[in-house]
Image (cartoon, rainbow over all chains, first blue to last red; front, side, top):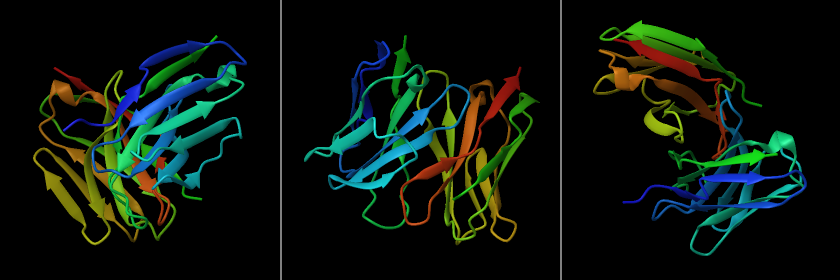
Length: 115
Length: 112
């Protein structure tokens, strides 16, 4: 079975632009979470979506937004890009059923570079 | 909020020796403890996890131990091999949520 897939793998943008990152979860997984990983650090939680509803939001500005589609895939959008947004953006999916903790499985991420 | 401390930040061991990485957490209600391995250019890969109703779990050369009283859990890798070289992260979920709080990571190097 395919794992979590993310696209694109790499992206270069300039300050002030907008970006959309995409994620397809493991088949059967209904929960998708987004994380930002700055070089040399652990991933930081951005959003979680379950059954197309936002279930959690991390400490990120309103420039960051996301949504989940009926097929459980997800998009992360970032507006007005700043140099500090340069990072690896990771998507994770799980069998989360609304409560409790289920293992999260990560994709290989999108490497975003802001010039 | 949950605070996760991971040590050491770097670890170098001879091939065939054992490696141990430790994490401490702050929320006594935490009940699920995963470990991830991240290789260069890849996303974190779940390698083992443990729930609070057991004290130890093993999977071939890797094991995780949990001490709920002291609020720490450890990753043990025995008979290390060059392919074990990677960055390892512990994580703790916010209670009842799928939000993982990660440790700072440990860069493990296996010397041939």
